Length: 379
Image 1 (cartoon, rainbow, N blue to C red):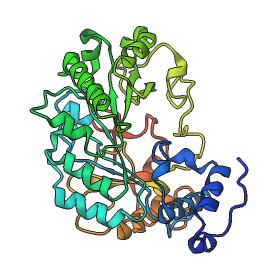
Image 2 (cartoon, rainbow, N blue to C red):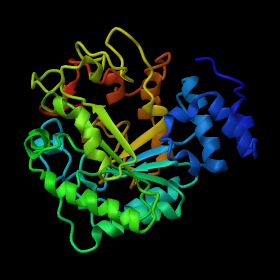
Image 3 (cartoon, helix red, strand yellow):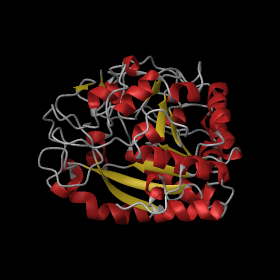
């Protein structure tokens, strides 16, 4: 892609023209890096940081003046399901189980509010198991931060919890429903109850309707797998009954060293970085070098503050620091991050052999170490 009219970073820092900066981001297709629903939340300080981050990524800068505009914060790494491609579902995660404290969440948000555009409150667990989730969402909303959670919704919530969740200021609720009957659904969402999911979705649709709520955006998805492939067409009809705003058939990530027969027959629904796949992938094959987007855009903070450079890692030994004990600023330009970014440049600043230097954005490679049978990688 040809990039248009990109000024130097100092010019962006000194600009007070929001409309000009937005036009610049549109002309250069930078908004492809954001959820489309998050774009309206941008203000001057956030769009300046965002554009600078995009330029520093293009220039493969290793020490950044920009900050992460997307932060993944895991409210808990506990889950009620037993999904067989997830380290949590397999019971194989090496990180101690725990729950993020509200004060720790507040500390992170207070630090990041000037530059963070999106906060995703989930990673290796079921976020609604954290009793403070609603308060966290309210706090993020008060700081004009767009929020997204991914929930299995396969829990019987007490009292008016669902209503509080939907009225919390949550921006987008994502739910994976990998089968439209219990038999197919439970093949992957083990221990899950589709009827509970359906009842919760009906309740959410009714709450939104009664209160004329535009948010949260309801995004329902089916991960394309061999066992649900025959239900893909009907899934769209199924999802519409809950007034879903977005309905998707998504592609799975799996452990390429395990022949578990999860991948669908349709090669267009398999990432091309897996054997036989045809779908576009942000990952690279082993014979190519493709710059990873994560070291310039986002950061993952686990419930205990342990910080990872991307969401496919489940390994406390791969942490780049602790965002509760230290500042994001310090971690963001740490030797670990500089080494990781240098992997995609001239490599002269690699002083640490980080998980990024091992992965090299080849996230679907058979050579990478995995957590048990899961897709998660580790050192």
